[in-house]
Length: 346
Image (cartoon, rainbow, N blue to C red; front, side):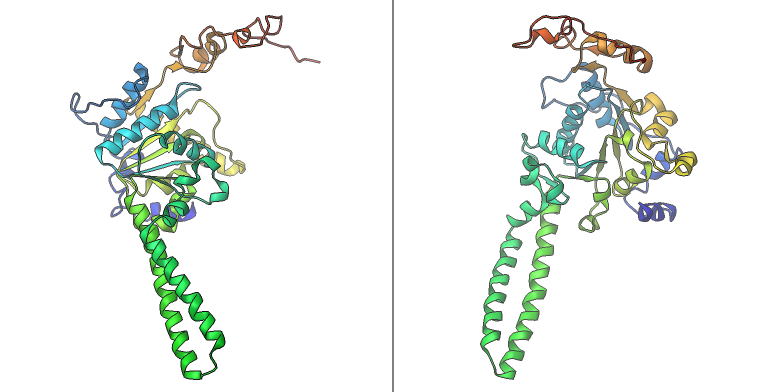
């Protein structure tokens, strides 16, 4: 994060984010494609009107777009559709989130589509079901990796020969060859990684992972940050410095990021980039999802009224569903009410 801050303070006028930085600091207005010039055919036929509107607005944005997704409104579904549309357009993307689980969630949803993607990160921290998309797995399947493997076999045979040889000159020759092979093996391994990253349309990683050495010379057409309202602004910059356009998805009316230093919070780290841009540009760059698929409308009403200007509506599949509608659940005093308020005083 400190490195990203240093890079940002030096002025990234030559970098890939040169045109994006002034927009994100309010020094230049965001731009959008002319109305009617952008259209799309959804891959997901079940998108609701607010998701379709948001996707159209995202695809029309030329520098920044905020996807505001209140609880249960299908934010990840919308993000996945945006990724698929951008792949179709030929964009190279970096998709990030603050937590591994949120990144894996996107990987899992994309896995059902034929997308060339790579998940960066330590395999031990990834969900088992996304390991197939992990960089290590992809590298092992590449040509350069099998060449590196052949070199390793050759080195093993030479090492065996070295142990049996007493002659000084012969030993020297073998050691010289081993050094050459070792260099070649390293080069092949690096090339294997480069090949995989170059070939991918979408690279997925946590925000911290975006600063991986493996991405040093890679720039992106689009940076997507999910759960952006729960990420520190400076963590977002680790990804943003690598691209010329960004889409941030999240809900600034839910939990903010965890900040342990009171002083840091007071000096502005408590305010996220998502929140800052929402205040700076508002509806100009933002779209809110308004149909929720998670809860009975009576549970949703309070938050819809208090936080979302009564704009959230419950989808018909959940609007009136009750616990006793579930199989093997009987009607009783605890399953009949939708909302049970319990006074815990005393």
